[in-house]
Length: 173
Image (tube, rainbow, N blue to C red; front, side, top):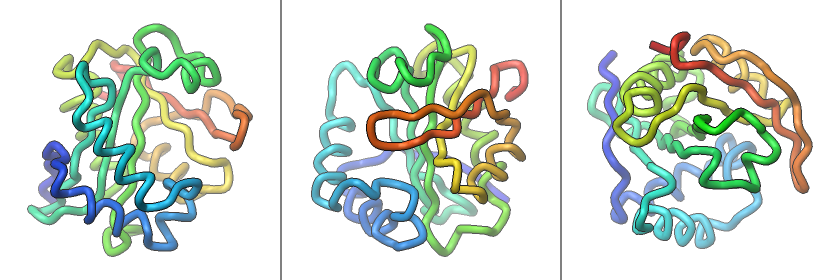
């Protein structure tokens, strides 16, 4: 399996919104927003200077298969206050298109992304990476466990409960 990543372009946004609109994705990712709101959010993040969030299209064997994004928690204090993972903590969010779900790709994609982007120093300096699925998203939690993430705590934000998992740089490389 060949896994690669390419930066999200403005022209990719309609496809990303289509992927997110599928019920099996929308159930867990972007469910509180409309497609138009997500489109504007991504557009703003892609064009921001300085860059706070980096978005990538996941490619599996040359086919666009989903989106993954990363950022330093310190760039988003509202999230960082809940997670409390330290100054050099990154966070990752991921979803795959429906036709790539439940095929065993997720942990390989996550490990490759951690090595190539989160812990490589290309984007920022991070010693730990966190992810926050909902506690009921058992398939995602299993995938993150396979990628090496371990549960650290469960936190309640203003509007959701997050099952915080993390992996440090030495475990991911």
